[in-house]
Image (cartoon, rainbow, N blue to C red; front, side):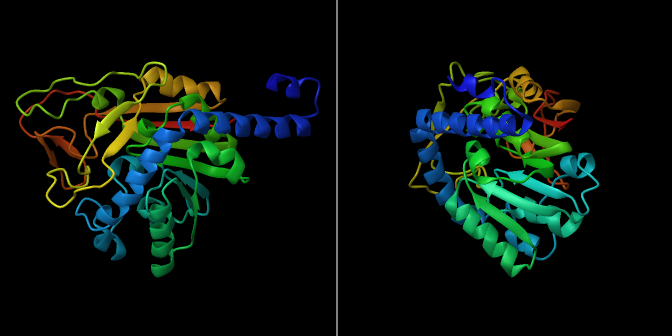
Amino acid sequence: MIVKKFCYVSKGQFLRGTIILLFEVSILLKKNYKSYFEANQKRWDELVSHHIKSRYYDLEGFKHGKTSLLPTELKELTNLEGKSLLHLQCHFGMDTLSWARDHGAIVTGLDFSENAIKMARELSDVLEIPATFIQANVYDIPRVIHEQFDVVFTSYGVLCWLPDLTGWAKAVSHCMKSGGRFYIVDTHPYGEMLDERYSDRVSLGYPYTSKNGVPHEWEEDGTYADPEGVTTILKNKTEYGWYHSMSEIINALLQAGLHLEFLHESTKGFFKYHPDMVKRADGLWEFKNMRPEIPLTFSLLARKP
């Protein structure tokens, strides 16, 4: 039994045992969900070449100094000058590099897509923005990351790719310094339920939470970065995702030993959740004609004691 490793041990032995336990948990998770992770990784590897050309990401604007960060995180995550920041599920690194270039953070980005990490490293070199990028699954953090950070950051479309939030939260805590901050901004669980197939009304078409870790399977030709499907036709159409309730998100972080400092909910989105939504000048999305006043995103800050 793994628990025996923690009986009558010193502090140093306990810490080593904790790392061993997290590593073994990550192996079990990857084994149980391997086929789903592999399918998603193939799709995200393919998406990189489309996303770097999309208006949604506006890579050329970023290269010329435009931030990729949105108002929510810019308002809520501050005082980063000289702070070490780990960005989980960083895609091809624009947000990671924005925190470094515009806010003085010392940044590391992690993503499971080989093509995304290659592109992130290329951007770092071309723009001469110091950054470290690591290709790994979030659940591999105990194996691949051995330092602790002042800030752990993750944002926009991240939790839906993770089957187990308990393991995720433990991985987050593992790489946080004592007193460090964890910040997430993502789709609100209610927003995940919106059915995009109906343009004349707001309808719920997806579950609030996944049962027993069973993923939802989609067949998608395109990408959220090209919502009209004009330019994107993918070879890897299958993707798997998981729905998580707000209580599941918060309880996972609390059980990992983090202390919640705030939870905010917003009626603004970060992409076109529904056909009636339009993009605002600040980069956020809102309903144009309908006014359902429902939460589309949430943001949360937690601290490690």
